[in-house]
Length: 287
Length: 166
Image (cartoon, rainbow over all chains, first blue to last red):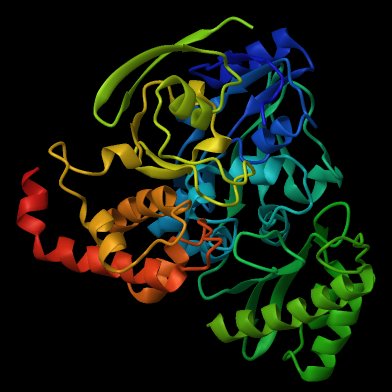
């Protein structure tokens, strides 16, 4: 499989990259790890005139703490997320999720920025970013801006990013120590995308849920923040009856397509079950 | 489309070549450098037959453009054995433990195992299975592939001094 011809650019800085994208116009595409873009180019579902490879931009790499946030450079690979002691200690759901993405080879190359930014609802990181209430830092020729992950996703491959803009970093508010988390993903085999998945981040105080965020992967045109389900469990002790109501509330916001992973009815039920499992595991982990 | 000059190290050898930007690394290795050890299996980044080592990472060379490898240090299955032809412990393990049937997945399996054992010299069986989960064997000969990697890990552990001296 040979993609259409394109011109290749490898800028050294964000400024250079966004200037190039502005100059080259809408048929140019930024290239991160390439493990979503290159496959669709090989199938000729995409035929960009130019690729602007972000791999040479040192500023887009790395994971650091900034006050009460953790800032992750967009070109940080899934493999680097998995190996980060900082994340393992402070935002362990990112490591747990990265380990469920694709396979080792893909994780060496695939980036958190590409996974979060491209707007494919089948990706795992977007729902986790909704649950963590992360913020995306975007850069374009006109300057930089921040967009909440919860406002970023509009439809399949339709996001708040403008042509010529790139995602430079993801800013995650560090969850309180002692929070509970879980990313539950059902897949047919290693390396597969989710039939459905659920992310939960919660805190528990005196046996009751003090705060909770729930988000779902691949059961709609965008990742879904299950606000009602989270509101139902907040203040509860996660009794079976309450969890049942939260499952129903999560199922109610899904609209999965029928595909080889299952019928809409099946995938909706899977999403509900995964919410219950994720709540259970997050609770067990919360201090 | 104009060709781009790339220079990289492949199996310890400096290489400078002209490539079209759209040329995939697997095609570059096989067709331009005549390194036909890395195989083209699925062409969709699932099967891992095209796995090569790129700057200390196992990558599926069907999903990387050759231009992205400009400046990189690449090891393919052809670069795994010693210069005098002595087999690497992994190659020996695959032979001794019958780690291959048709052999199509073997270059990818060995190249992946090469990186896995450097990151985790003493992996459990489960860690090996997870570590090679991006490589498919259509003969389903996983049992002996796992044994072959265990063989290599044991052999390399016994030969630490010699390895470190290289």
